Length: 507
Image (cartoon, rainbow, N blue to C red; front, side):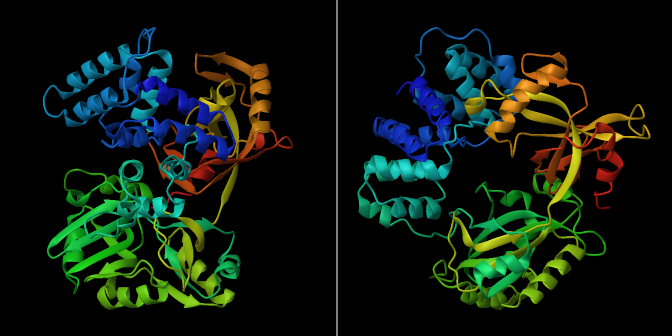
């Protein structure tokens, strides 16, 4: 199949809000793929090529992008093959080799294909083809029960391979996909609530557990062989020898554990999330040690526990890893749930997760059985600039550059604004239209992608906190920023300060 057909379908899916229309378009495309094209194509559509990250960033893509081809000739298989070569490039000269491969590939691509290739490489496909939509499309194209396809994808952790099996194999082959020690599964996800008491109203009796400010891990052990995976199912065993050592010491032969790992300070309190992630991503040894904490067990010594109630899984977890259990209490009392939530925040953690005590482990699903509760912080910041959108937001000003007031001139001129992050989250179509009309009226300069504006418009932004960053002059960056509303009632001089935001840093 020509890559242009994939790119065109991605654009079509991105341009419609209708889930049914998205599924129809994707299913029609999937039916026309050759068997060997199915897994790569699905990976491209969801922004997760089977090769993972291949060592190419936006600068590399920009440098390789030139005059587009006038006629589509690239195929899905050719893009997959080039990504194999990019992923395999290593050692002296690998950077130049990647650049050459990339220039040759993008030079053969049409304008639409160039944009699509760039988004695939950067993990920013932005088609609206979320994995749930693609899963439904696979079931439609293969005429298989959607629950069967969904479970196979969850337990295999590989949507592309699930698609190949669904479209080319028998239904019994899909049904035979099960839990395997050593093969990661998609993690169970949590919904959100405003308070622990409110979450308890939904779940009934529940395990109210600390939500650690760490990195999610899934650990598989078979005998002495231990493997550690991220929430995105990347194998990071070599980076976490301390976690491997802990799990090898547990009184089991085979086990699959779900949990978190984080770095602690001298007093046993969590270090800032950024420090954990820096250590988590290090390819070489670091001084800081990551401590594993587990909140679930999916398999133990030949016994699958996915479909067992949480109460049973917690008993097993306490039996095999009592010293590495995430703190929490089982309760149906909202006052107890709120106390655990306060205890978690006092300990420097993010909040709590409230888990229905009778719930099975629904791999890859976000339902109402697990509900996370985190305090939402809101700050009034100033819009410094806005970037033009892509995909469904093409033609609209979308991604906001956000600044905090520096009244004392600690990071520049007194009364100026210090950039602290960007966001396009939370913007409705109405707000996008308003921005696109309003910002050019106060424009100070622009480039091809960005419009800078007078720092006069205040926007209320919700964040999960801040982290240290060398990207911005104030030394911090917002975490998970999203737009709540514009504040017409406030002037820029009333915006929150960079000093206030820096005060959120722990340590």
